[in-house]
Image (cartoon, rainbow, N blue to C red; front, side, top):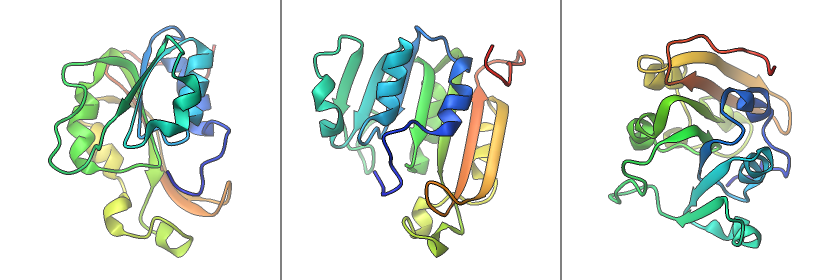
Length: 183
């Protein structure tokens, strides 16, 4: 989790959440304080939330539609969800490139990937500064565009919630065009 986290869901998620079924299943990877898990639960989704430290969602431990998994996603550890598929896979403010293949494989047919994190140039504005934690230009397109249908992609500077350089993608495991705006 980084210092840009607020209690409000990401505008990118809010813009494209309609692409996944409201009563479907979601994976919130590296959930941090859980702002997106909370939003997805409010939409009616069953959410699997994975983080090295799940304490950000401890207040929801009795929520029947929430599966909390404590897992270190980096290093030599195996993917904690082998064979599991979701209608929505969400990653925000987190980057571990070796997980890209597992994220693609975690989508059900028709499933939606929503991914956004920091990119090259962000080091001028704050954390993260380490190039290992910053996407290169076009990296999400290269990682997911060949195997998924890209619905939206952005890369650039934003001033709020704090100055940062970000890259975002929304892609679906489907060949049928999707509505760009919520119905």
